[in-house]
Image 1 (cartoon, rainbow, N blue to C red):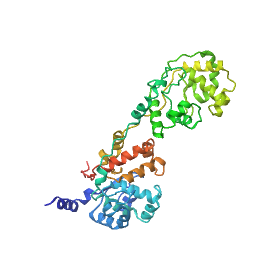
Image 2 (cartoon, rainbow, N blue to C red):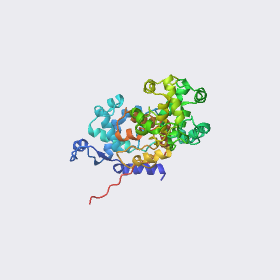
Image 3 (cartoon, helix red, strand yellow):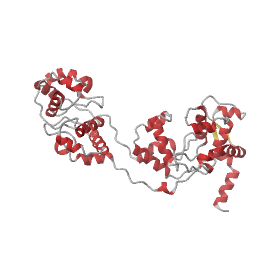
Image 4 (cartoon, one colour):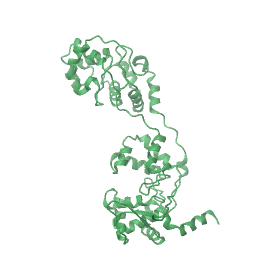
Length: 407
């Protein structure tokens, strides 16, 4: 007997084993079974007749999802071999409006609970899609943004210190600056908002990616006090610093990315920056008003106070590789995206364009799910593309249900 014939025979003999469902109470009641508590899921065994009826009801689904649940349309998922309780729950979500999609809402609007069960049973009983030849090509590894930032920072070390901690009076420390502030400051030099010819020439050629890599590298470096002298009186500076705490934090550690931390900063640079705000060569209304009454002695005292404070690192997370993200996703979606929880979708061999679309939808809130919103909130476009490509090339495996006697 050929392998194909064996597969067909096993489907004929064991269709109910392949399509045991976990269903909502309403479906159980409609089938004459005792309803469970609200929001509970319970087992239902789909018969061959149920699966055949599900196939008949699902004929309209083939227009989008393809024959036998294998989609050939961009952005439309494969549903063959998908986990049945997940299919049922999401069909219900489209029906109730919990998940919004006009096409899907119209397709399931008039289906009964029993029909939803049978459709889910039918699609879950099918052989899942397998990776397309184009999806099996492993994309080139993404460059490490921290390593790229470190490489770019080599040109900055002569002035700002090899690890971003200044040893040169008049040059600011960059280690531990919040990346958002760093990018804004660098763009300020590039567009002339901050006046410094040398910094303008260095910042102007940098792309957004270059700036983000540099910012990330310096944001992850452990900050220390600048290794430079401070000429003012720290005690006198402490009294004046009370007016600065609202924006720059107690002891100069900011809690707002829009305002830089100034603890441990080089004193000479600090004074030069205050003078620039005062004379307008740095255009910033709040700072101009704040320094309007400060003379040079007061500025040096402030600089000495902040230079003596201990800087603290910002809340910056090191980016995860695709492999690290996969480990997190596999906790719910199964090894290589082959879910073993009937309520959680399998991702293996799913269309990459569909995975890309839905991850962005969870990220934007267009698709609602608290767990997925939290998981996707920090994903970059490159992270999403990497995850979609990874799962699209994984081999999909059917979910086998084992019925055991009750004790």
